Amino acid sequence: MTTPLVSVIMPMYNMEPYLKEAVDSVLVSDYPSLELVLMDDGSSDDSLLIAQEYAVHDPRVQVHTQTNAGACAARNHAIALAKGKYILPVDADDRIDKCFISEAVARMESDNELKVVYSHAEFFGDRAGEWKLLPFSLSLLARKNMIPITALFRREDWEQAGGYCQEIIAREDWEFWIAILKNGGKVIQLPQSMLYYRVRANSKRISDRALKRHVIDVLNRRHPEFFEQQLGGKLHYNRTWSKLLNRLSRIIFPRRIVVNPQWKELELFIRTLPVHFRNEGIPLYKGRNELKEFREQGYELVVKSFRIPNIFNQLAYNLFRPSKARRSYRYAERLRKAGVGSPQPIGFYSTGTWLMFGHSYYVSLKSTCPYTYRGFATRDFSRKDDILRAIARTTARMHEQGFLHKDYSAGNILFEERADGTIHVEIIDLNRMRFGRVSMEKGCKNFERLPGTPAMFKVLADEYARVRGFDAHACLRLIEKAHAADPKTDKRIKK
Image (cartoon, rainbow, N blue to C red):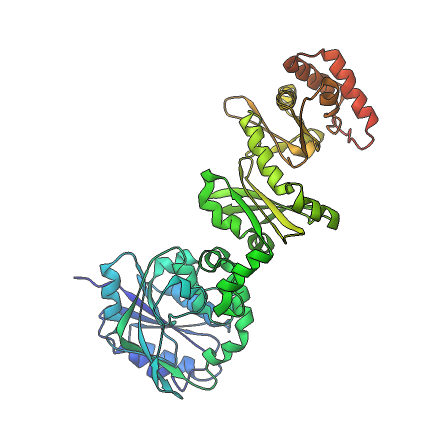
């Protein structure tokens, strides 16, 4: 029976006094199929020479070196060079029991749902006794780490997690276990003490305590959905009280979150939108409002963040009017139900206090339409008249249903030519819609912010009038009148 290869990875930085003890504890293992990958992180002592001496006498030992980049970079570099199905990190000042790898691999091989195996542990060095690690749970992992760095895991899980986070400079194993386990998987702690953790005055575990705020800030930024799910919000600096503090925060700063029932898998993303929008996404537009593009669970999304309104409107939105994000979501649903194209609405998020309105975000699928009406100013379309007629039909259908877009501008009309030859049109930026009967005069005036040539206006007027049963000449006069009366209209269209 063949045994899977285990890659023990050991980063080292100025570990000359301890390295031999750590390496020997690995090489005396009773597991028959292992390699030891030693990664020197720019040591200034004889750590590298000691490691190279081991490599000369034992073919299981590989030695590599890099300029000093920290423990996470060293571990990632070592794993990238390793060949094992399983990975076991061991720090260069610790020791493992000779039976640990065999026991851990046996557990892993018997259960494909098992992701991490670690053991009970004991301190040695400046402190002796049992390291009392708490039983594993995701809820507890959200507040503290109970898994030591020396734990067996699959290489494929390291790959899916994106490796060790090189942004975090303390408690990096905590972040790594969250990344591996937040979406599920079993964890086992072996009942025997098989890890011996050295305690010394200048150890990283002790120096890391001063970086508590940095660690928590990085964790919140990288795993907002995990903390939302386990703690009802972010991890606080006072970690123990995080659940209670988040409940109190929801009372003082209530949120309104709506997710389209067809897209429930995106709920956690939407519930943590402020964190994602602040730290991620591809910027599309930044002005009074801001647009970003995201790829989440295979979907391409566009998120619009609305500027916080002035103090009077904050009161109005909170007490009397739905937010712009909420209106955008509702109006997109209404348009689509009426057969008017608009990107699929996914959900919205808004927050504030009981008195004052705060941030709001609207989420939709990214439109497949590559062009906007503004494109007429920069390129010649081979089916220009067909496109204009499709836009006019969409406008007429919208008006016939009693929808009047109050920001009907060149950038808010999207279109594409589909494989079957049809022209598909979508309308965006919907928070300023009005509802009611749309007369011929009001409908034609709605074209006032669409630039064009007389020939373009003629096509728009002809199709709009045909759909709505109006006189084409009357519609053309009204459209031309609206453009003449609006000095802001951009008329720079190729003739």
